[in-house]
Length: 147
Image (tube, rainbow, N blue to C red; front, side, top):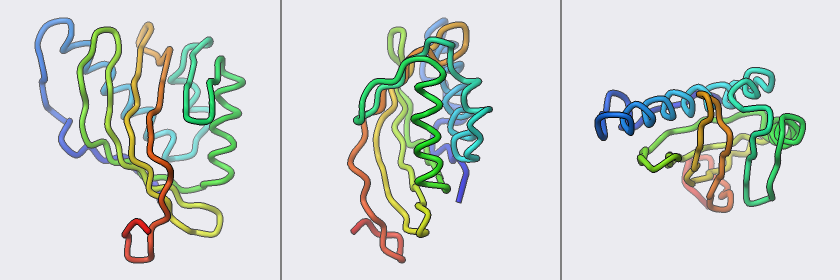
């Protein structure tokens, strides 16, 4: 399972001027980032980050390509499938938030729902900081309902 869906972001101009352009750049980056994460392509995924980027998850803080790649490799090994639905985007000053719903598929083909928000900062068009606020994974039943 892989893919990224934009529920209501595509074509939406939330504000004008520089803030609108900054949000559009962040939106394009997060969609491309999730597409590569869903494809489980670690090399392509890492091209979205600055060399000294920081990723903060409920598990801790990871700085630099080596640490960030290790974080994602662990996820890719444990959960070979991922589908992300971007629910909403929020403009900020210097950072932007994207609400998502994701379904991870593990090696036993069990599916896990994770819902949350990613707060993203860009530097020269690349992710310099990504902080993920997310609910604990919930196992989905065969009918797709959270257990």
